[in-house]
Image (cartoon, rainbow, N blue to C red):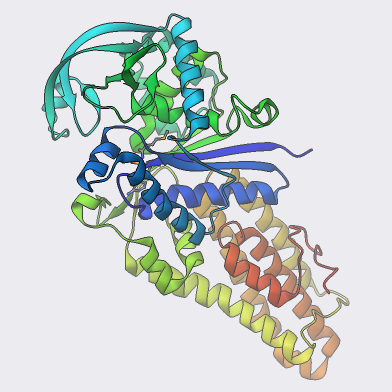
Length: 484
Ligand code: MSP
C-alpha cells in the first residue's frame, strides 16, 4: 500500500530575496519528496512564505510600499526561483491568504477556550530584530542589536503548562527531534523553567498581522501565525480527508536557528489545540562562506541564479546535496563546486553516458542490444547494483544524503571500470553478441544509477533516460528489459 508522506520547509520571510541558504532547504525537501514518490509513496510537499510581522512591515516601509504590495512582489521572486530549481512542491502557502487567516483564528479561539491564553502587563527588554522580549542575559550577550525597554499589556500562551508533556513526548519518541545533538539541546533548554509565550502585538506598535479574534486592538505574534501554516495547507479546516491523510507531518525541515520555535512553541501549541504532533522535526546546519554565515548584511551572499546561469540547475542541486553532511554546517566555495562539477558530473557520470550512447548509436542503431550469456564480471555488476540500491536506501532513511549520493557515484565509477576492463568498443569488432551483453550490462547499470540520482538531478537524468530510450524508473536490475 502507498504510504503518505508530508514534508514541509520553513516558510520564508519576504524581507529578503531568496539566496543559497533558503534555496538549500527547499531543494532538500524536493529531493526527499521526489525520493518518496519514486518509492511509490504519496508525497505532499509544502513550501511558502511568512508574510506578516515587523521585519516584513519594515522592509515594505523602506521600499515605500504597503506591506501587501511588497509581499505580492517579493512572492514572485521566490516562485520563479523555485520554478527554475525544479521544485516539485504540491502547495505554496502565503500567510496573508484567507485560507490561513481562518485557521489561525480558529486555533487562537480553541487555545483561548481551553483557558491557555491570559492577559498580562509586561515590562521588559524588547529586541526589534527578534520581535520578542528578551532576558537581561540575552541583552548582555550583545547578539541583539536594537533593544528597547517596553511596558505593554499583552496576551500570553501558557506554554509552561505543557513543559512536562513535551519532555515526555521527546523522550518517548526518539525520532521527534533530529539529529540527536539538537534533541539534547532542546532537552537541556527544557530542564529550566519554561516561560509563557507572548502571542500578541498591540496594533499601536505593529498592525501587519492577523487580528486576535478576542481583542481587535491586537495582532497575532508572527511565529504563532506562521507555524500554523503547516496545518492550514493540508486542509485542517476545509478538507478533512486530505488532512487525515497527511497529518501528522512526516517531517518539518528547518535550519538550526529556528529550532526552539519548532521544537517548543509549535508542539505546545498543538497540545493545547488537541492536535497530534508532527513525527519528525529535522534541523540542518548553515551554509557558510569562509566559515561565516551567509547573509545579506555581511555581503557574502551567493546568488543561486548566477550559478545556475553558468552551470545549469542540476549541478547546483547536486553540489548542495553532496557537500553538506545533514545536521552540520558546510562551507560553500566556488572551488569545491567546480571540483565536484568536473570530477563527479563531467568525468564520472558524463563520461559513462557518452561511452554508452556512442556505442549504442554507432553499432546498434540507438537500440540497447539483447542480452546473451553473462560472464562472471557482468554478473558482478548486476550484484553490485543491488547492493548500491540497498545502501542508497539505508543512507536515505538515515538522512545521510551525501553518503547516499556517494554510494551512487561509486557505483557509476565501478561501471566505468567495468567498461575499461571489458572494452566493448574493441570486442564489438569481433563478437557483436558479446559486446552487446557488455553494453546491455553497462547501460542497465547506468540506468539504475540514474534512477537513484534522479531525485537530486531531475533534468540531467531525464536526458539520460532519453538517450537510453527508456521510461523505466524501476530500481530493479532488468527493469528496463522492455526497452523500445
Ligand atoms: N519565517 C521564518 C520561518 C517560519 S517557519 C514556520 C524564518 N524565515 S527565514 O527566511 O529567515 O529563514 C528560513 C530558513 O532559511 C531557516 O531555516 C534558516 O535556517 C534558513 N537559512 C537562512 N540562511 C541560511 C544559510 N546560510 N544556510 C542554511 N540555511 C539558512 O526563519
